[in-house]
Length: 448
Image (cartoon, rainbow, N blue to C red; front, side):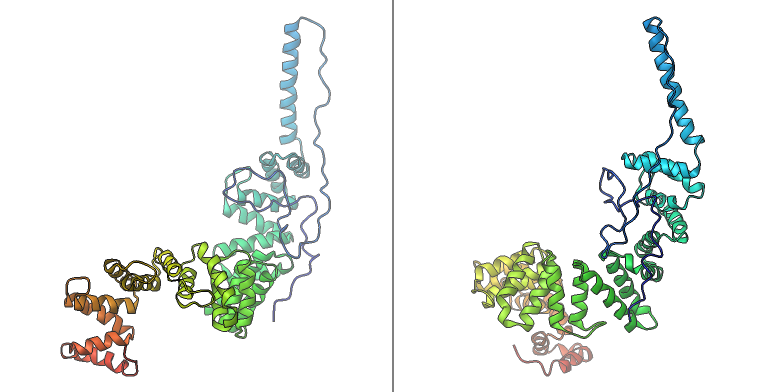
């Protein structure tokens, strides 16, 4: 079902030039030489032939210096140097063919003079040397020897692609993906499939995944996404493994399988991905209770990286003694960590810890503070508890007028205790249609 790859030998880049590598835009130093653009690809493209370097000609005849006074000798040497420099410059800029300009650019590249190679590449490309199109496009794409100019880079990449350079097809696919031109990106990635590295496989999968909702056959698009996610994940790509694990867990584009989800979440988790560590732990707690201790370890690793959901789940494990010895103090610690990131359930649980002196000294004002914050974040249980406190004056002055909107918000989320509170207040007499509808929905909910 996956796309048919192109032949690997059909579109190899010309052997005269090694393409520019991708560089970190934040880097201030350019690399000492050009490296293959797909160095990180798996499988790597076929090796290129050694670069044939042609040394540029130079004016070899040194001026004859006669023995005169020291001043005349110095002046003669100075004039000779000027003439030599001007002559060399004229020869390079006006006396070379496009191919010689390209060869001279290669020599400058080998010497680490990337900025000096740029104008020669321009001359060579303008003169029709196809081998210069790809590196010139990379110069404009990466700002090597010139300012960054994506449209001009695309122009030269397109000319290189038309000349059969597969690396240019990949570069254009990357640009298409960055510009959210997903159909064009998919077409080019498929054309160059055998030359894609793990990141490009991941981007191809993402292009399919993001295009699926609007596709004529969404199921087929998701199957293609799974195929490319798998190719990237098998090479250890963490984000691809995360996406593949999520698809396996939900059964999107592939059969639902918690075991497969655990496998792929593990790939990403072992590379330090905090979200993958959290999801892996959650799957283990859900499907493999005997591995609860392992789940707690993954939660701890994710919480250490600041993952609020992991900190909350770890706190619950410490509260319940699941996978570890119960520790209200540690539970409160991780609840505070998650609450600091405004995790709604963590703020509500932390409020209970303060209210009931669980792992923390009793502090009703802090409890009300966190009930109010969780209620504002939309937590129904917190809305009910804060409303109840306002209704009955628990730690705060009674204020039924402020409590009613919170009861209503919790009730609209099908929170049965809030619906019961509205019934007890006979609010249905004031808003019969609205409240009666809420009460009908709550008939099957257990009492608190």
